[in-house]
Amino acid sequence: MSSDSTTAPDSVVADPSTHALKVADIRAAGHAKLQVIADFDGTLTRYWYDGARGQSSHGLLRQGNEEYDAKREALYQHYHPIEICPDIPLLEKAKFMEKWWEKTHGLLIEGGLTLEAITKSVSDAAIAFREGVMELFEYLEERDIPVLVFSAGLADIIEEVFRQKLHKSFKNIKIVSNRMVFNEEGRLVAFKGKTIHVLNKNEHALDMAAPVHGNLGEDPNGVIDDYSLVKKRTNVLLLGDHIGDLGMSDGLNYENRIAVGFLNANIEKSLKDYSSSFDIVYLNDAPMHGVVELVSELCP
Image (tube, rainbow, N blue to C red):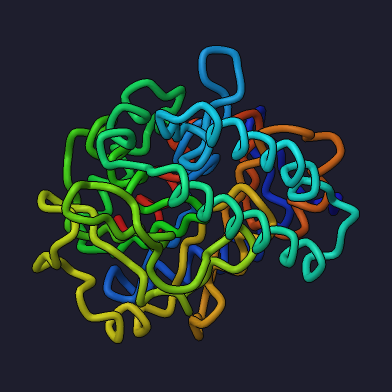
């Protein structure tokens, strides 16, 4: 970190002068040029929940079949240490992540996951949005600024978390994640498209996006129905909790990007890498209030 870096109790800005220039450029370009790209687990949601590690949209799922829940947990115990290991090259790590996701999706189908199980799993889950997320979403919706939520989890579960935890729909938000296919009995039979895991989620996957709105699963008359219009929004505010999340803007020819990182754990070990990768780093599972303030600067 440079000697010019500024620190606050819960945030680090490694290069204040460059950050200020980006803010000024994005503000001058106006609302119509801005889009927000956000990771879901550990970014929009809290890392800690009631003193323990909060659940992810994948991890909260209970199939109602203990055998298959145990099999998926065994995969987590095997592959999660690989996911968080800073010493494994990203290309090598991506191959492990693809194997993990495909095996997990296979178990969900084989174990007979149902829509009813998803609803109950979310209701019972240790998952919550960061304080300030609702304020952020409302501010962006009022200004017709599109939000693309990228997740390596499951779109159907994320939609249910929105329903149960926020109790509100947003016409400007779309989910880019792994989408399930259910039969008439509400039983999982397949997944749509290519697998999205933690290291390959980016704007190339927009064809998998689904809207978050009142009638989830249908196309709304929202502000981001036409992805060619999203592509024209060449100023980006990116929110993530892994350095790999910076790749979410791959496929977009942006002019300015402000990258906000949430460093939720292993701060002493990871802060140097995070502060050299993100424009702003929020520490210790910080609330979303700082991002709300930033957005109000970008789009007053």
